[in-house]
Image 1 (cartoon, rainbow, N blue to C red):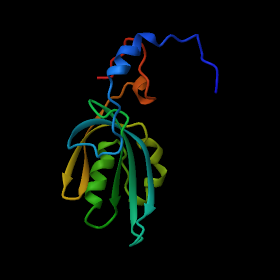
Image 2 (image 1 turned 90 degrees about the horizontal axis):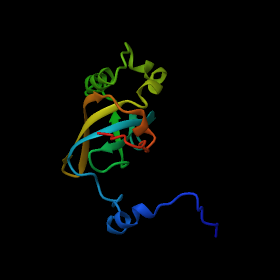
Image 3 (image 1 turned 180 degrees about the vertical axis):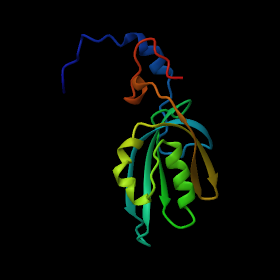
Amino acid sequence: MSEANDSIDLSEFDEAFAKAEAQDMTTEVPDGRYQALIERVSTKQTKETKRPMIVWQLKILGPTHRNRKLWRNNVVTADTVAMIKRDLLLCGVKIDRLSDLVFHIQELQGTGLEIQVKTNGAFQNIYFNKVLAIDPTVIGGSVGEGDIPF
């Protein structure tokens, strides 16, 4: 067991800590609009059909469910390329060929978005509504003294 660090006094948070309910990180995020950050974008293949897929990892910044992770998978087909192009343009990535996406993935990371989560039967869909300016102090998950993320 490690020694206690006496240089930081956390006692001012004792009452709030006692009253706080731990967030349930196992349930799905309910339908609604959220501010989110694109943490990572990658390309891979679907397991069964081996079709190309774009995988978006998002982190909710608020107004509720802060720090929850969401994943959005876009299977690339002739029917989905228009939606993918729309979302890339919304995020500021203008490319002429989808194959050039691999050269622009880094540009997507750190982009703030207003997203909408909608449940459709057994599936949860995530829609990108608009780009948001995100305070850099919020990205790391910490907010400086006096900063209000929203």
